[in-house]
Length: 458
Image (cartoon, rainbow, N blue to C red; front, side, top):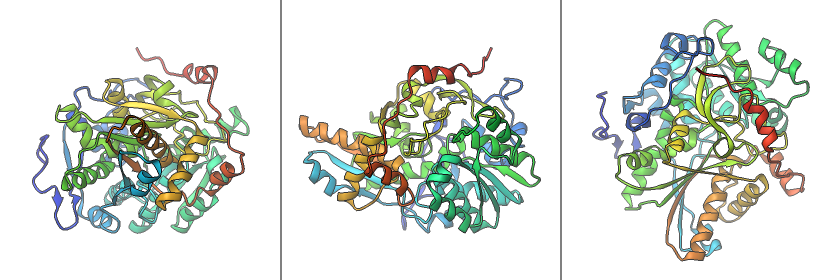
């Protein structure tokens, strides 16, 4: 496809209003994300080096800073048609309860079997693995949405799927684990004794409840030591935000169809996949000076990468075997408290979003866990959808924004991402209802321990 920042002719098909290409936000960024570095040499990593870990086509997408639009392969597009376009819903009932002049819309990504937006990238990555002739893929999962989505995609395409699930989530979310197994995936609690890096982590931290950084290390090791396998990741990477841009492109199309211009766009932020996808076309217009949206990232106070992290090169995983990425990070050794049940557990943030935040194009706030679940419950009681705890971070911020409008009389239009459903998160809801959930927030001393492990880059 021609390298251009102009939207390709007929990118949206009229019969179902779904994009025919993904949008690469990096093509329009004035300051590109800093390159990934080889962890051994500290030099920019090459396509050949990444190809040992990732699928060949995905490596090209990961490193491409210039191509604005990537055509969606026909087989992926046909798969999308099972559940896309996803609905953009006006929250009339929530507006009424809040007695606000604000108009609230949410892009609902939970209307597929996997229950979240993760399927948008899972099917793309599985497709490229199948196209390359691989036997299977390995991955990590935290709350379980990504593992569920990938196991579904692999089942559809006939690929083997090995999932390393953060131990605390493996124990707290057994039903999510069983859905993965139903689709044919093997699921291992991480850190485990099945990999060298897992054994090393357990030796250094006996009894640890794990982290995404731990699980990533194990999944990468399993991929590079198994013939015919590659590693795939559900967030953070440039390629993932590319695939998730379908969320924002659909949102943009729906809003334009009805002549609606949003004032505030809100998304939850863990590694950056759904937030990056939702805001992509709106951020493009902001960068190009065509609009001035207020874009807000919402993260948990228990894992505050944006709001309390450092913008620095860091390892993407606890085992320090993955490429170094320049991002807002709490340190690859940071492990959220085990009582943090709201997902969004990754220690760092997408390099794309990190650069945009650093350049002042977006805001970030952190919210405590119990307030998040209060917002989730409030939303569920009036809108009829039980939201994923991750999504509830965005709901909390949207409600706060709407209540400010009630106080000031401003008639703002608020759009937020409802990334998925919470029907497999009932242990967390149970803890909230039983008063067993608290708002652990790391101290400066806790965070400093993670910062001390940041690599020194000349």
